[in-house]
Length: 483
Image (cartoon, rainbow, N blue to C red; front, top):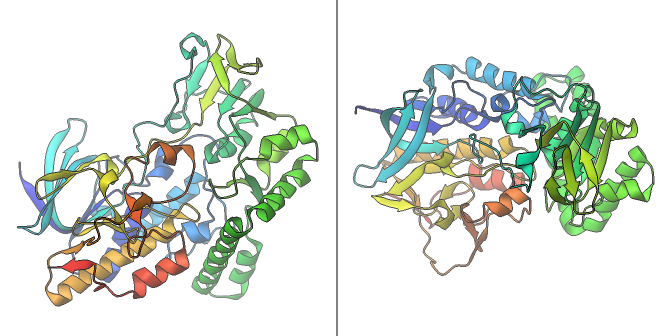
């Protein structure tokens, strides 16, 4: 089996991978690099998900790249617009020629003797084994499995006569027109999907085990659109980006300092949209604090409008069993359905699902400790992109791509071949990387890297703090070992 060598190898050609490649081309112009993409198209999440109404909860001024202004009139946009933006970026920066499609990475292994990574992958439908080597590895494969979403085991589902589909597996054959539809879940996917389904379905029921915080916001940013009329495009984009970063940071800080005040504000918005009936409001009043789980966005209040018009209803309760015609709750309520959509979450994974080894020793990612939320302790020349849970994914991805370029250039300048974060305090207590309580994070705690109690082993959910750390913080910090 032959092997190709590159200075830098990027796993994944989605939002993070394309951004990393663009930064490499500009900031490390002499480096050779390649992107390995398991699928046959770029775009990652925004090419994979095809369910009706798919969009992002993040505004395009922060979900977009720092170097490519978003020019559309809407701030909250559908998935197809995000995909077009990623493709345009790849084309403008000549990234497409560096991508190897249908290359699924199975194993990555580091050799200290050679100061390089070996990447083993399978190519195409024939699963031909291929090998690459590189000096520096960037993992931009996201945080969830593309193979399938998470669906709990539901009693009696085998006797249900209707169709059942997970949003991650949506295709054009799913028929919901004129059908009674039940969507299990009330997270971001459900809140996105339901208003679009309700336009053609006979009726849609959102079946939730417990309520979620849902916020209505305009899909257009009036301030951004005004700034673009009077300022150069790049300046207007930068100002809007910072406005949105600081606004979100304020509300996240408010959630931590004064959760009851923010909860009252959010529920006030629900009441303004749906009225003050206690039986209605109970479906939108969670038992947890705001931002213990991610808030859900309904652009222009489309979910609330669908409920008010009678096209959508909300039911809170636990499933006892599926029946031939639908779902029976533990309360005894029966819900008839022609189609059930299980918007029940994702299956999280690390390092793109690949096996990882250092000097012949296999490593379990759940045993690793995160260095600044960018690298892993005792793993050399490796940056793993994992975005924010309280802000746009791309904000962190941008910072980490530039940090990787900074490390690469620093090593070149000083003649180093490797950089490795070393944890000298083996007794330091560890905790989850985030206090996020969403189900898909809770299920994956055993496989996710941890954070320590002290710097630089903390993972910050704070863009401003991370900007200072990654762009201006010293690389010789007493923890990073250069060799």
